[in-house]
Length: 283
Image 1 (cartoon, rainbow, N blue to C red):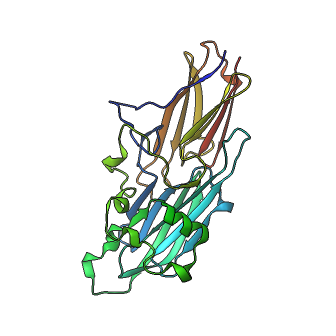
Image 2 (spheres, rainbow, N blue to C red):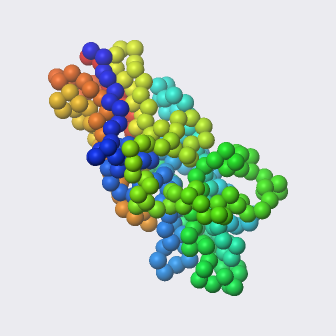
Image 3 (tube, one colour):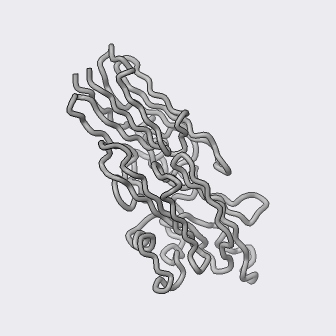
């Protein structure tokens, strides 16, 4: 019998809990998360880079000390993967009165976390400083060019100038409880520069089985489970809170239909850097 992939469906009332990932069922939403750390001049940023390992991450502080460019490569782990994926984005200060003085970074389980220290360089602005509305930047074609071949000598101006108007592009992606991240449709991952922008992919195998790649950023290799019940294959994952995350996240989804007497030992499961891969063999 041929194994059939189950497309993700909204979890309740026709809506996905998080439009960045169809399998996320609780926790902070969005591809990124930002907050100012209480009692400090430091800023915390969480960026989902599923499949990206430490040895491929690149972090560049713009000479203006207003923006940080980050990128990483998620290799083609298995022959069934459609291709490798390259991620890239930027985050920084929209104001002119502050600058970034230090960048601390930690990457684990497909999540890049940054602590940015900043200092005031123009005290005339006072409490109206827009750095308090600090934002993460969604990838765009222009940003892609900056990440791939960034040349500070020719870039000119404020590195985040296209967000200075504080439009929707500048705000979306920074609030983990933003209702904009709940809806009927899953949005493509704007951080992906090359490769699939989807949180999952499936491929029918020659033996009638299927291969699945499911992004569950933040889930350690030992915090996921695959179960088979009544002919349904279900994948769950728990991403514990780390560093200054608002909270942990959980993922759950029915991913395949198999015969009712299917032996779960026929499923090969692999986890690496927040990506779950399954080979569900046919009988």
